[in-house]
Length: 481
Image (cartoon, rainbow, N blue to C red; front, side, top):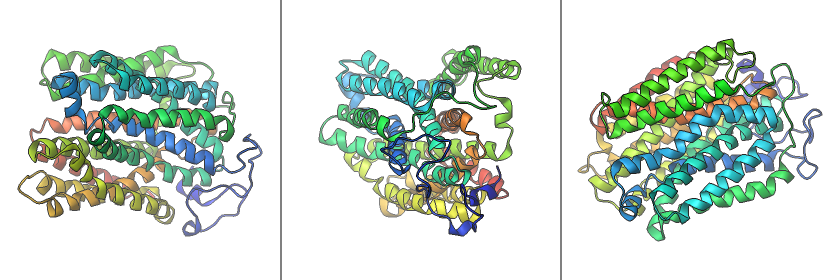
């Protein structure tokens, strides 16, 4: 599908790009080939439910960033243990996403979503009851396992809700901003919650959302079964799943350890090289498999590759700023967790406003150019933060604030545009695969890019290098509509 497809809705005549609206219900309450519950003739409530679930998955990823110092003091953890605790959720989340996408395509989106929500909700309920490090770490790993089922299943269901290419494109323009919104909410609310009560109450949000989704899902979501069609998954590709899961998890773990160990140490090199070898084996297996977990042709499309790179880089930029500023403000300026969270309120406001503008920008100028504009704006914000934002002597109002407004404004647009580029043209029977690949890029981006730029020595240099990467990718995206 090319970008012109976004100007045609199901059963409608072509319309000018500037006349399209944000994601909304198609005029016909039921697509003839997409069964939908009689209780929900419009996809809007289902979209709201799935969007809340997606934002909560990323909220959970970010929810321990601000209260990490308090968790370390309460449980008497060293820096290495805190880093693993923070990364545990993302390790299983990223490692299992491709297999989660295959399960969603193989057994049906709603079935996979329900199973994932049960695991995610149970682990989220266990985490605040943890008496010590081991139990809390296990709960975080289990949360990631559940999330790896939920995220691709949610995107597969989104494809079923909006079968028309134009409607799906508009839905993805909104969907793309939900993850960065969830990350922002995680950083804001976790600081407020830990200051007002305890960091343990941060887990109440994923528990409540999982319970609500399990209750409302059967009423609002289409009862999808196994995918059918020429591209439908026939098997589970267990060898590919094992290689991808262990390879991504091992390599990610090695990158995480670069924060406390040198790149030349065995602690980093063994998992890093082992993971790279397993991923090379995965690539070979997929080329010869009759029904590969990740068909090589899926990644050959230039627009899809650009979109996945945009998602990964935007996620890394926002995640890096949250981590560096959360630690810098509390350690360098001696700010409280509550005051640190308050510093990101303008970030959240700019994100919400830019998110509303992202859809119209994509429809008017195309996903590629909107992505380029978002990345360029984000690069300017990161550059300002690198120049003045980390200096304790520079006041917040003109040291941090300008960058904290420009970065989210650009991130919201680039996330939306990149999500459209990464998922356009995906057939309904591959909706879970598209969700797994998109979320894998979102999870691996911060791990890979952040680990690489931290080797530059200073936080300011890390932010400056990320800004340069934003600018380079913006230049590439500017030539794509």
